[in-house]
Image 1 (cartoon, rainbow, N blue to C red):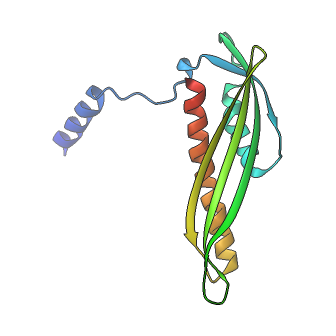
Image 2 (cartoon, rainbow, N blue to C red; image 1 turned 180 degrees about the vertical axis):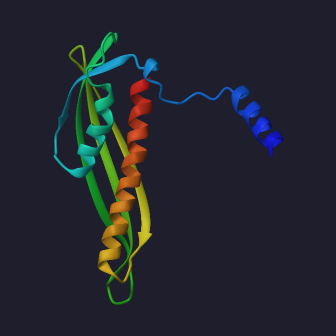
Image 3 (tube, rainbow, N blue to C red; image 1 turned 90 degrees about the vertical axis):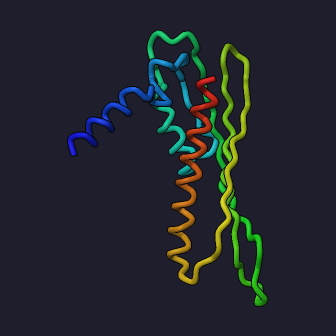
Length: 147
């Protein structure tokens, strides 16, 4: 057992692991975050970006405006005309203002799923999908801002 732990410790210390988003690699600070539409997606993105607000001694100061949209489309129906499969699409547009220059970037994620007989379970499933897609978009935004 001690040999396994020692071997594992040796591999982990020599593999060069570094966290992807270290705060010391951030070269910008966010002055203000504006929400165009006040919905759950926009608030979740804003809360994730709050870690970059008012960072001292950063060379770039930016303002961000967030517009988000959730859309559920019916992709197929059964013979009776009832919805059978759906496509949930989350799209987020961020506008970054730096030195009076605006840069706009759209992030979009989608997920296809089948209906459920219980509408309560379907709504909970859609909320879970929305949270997962929003988290993926947040990671995409973080990567975009780090460039």
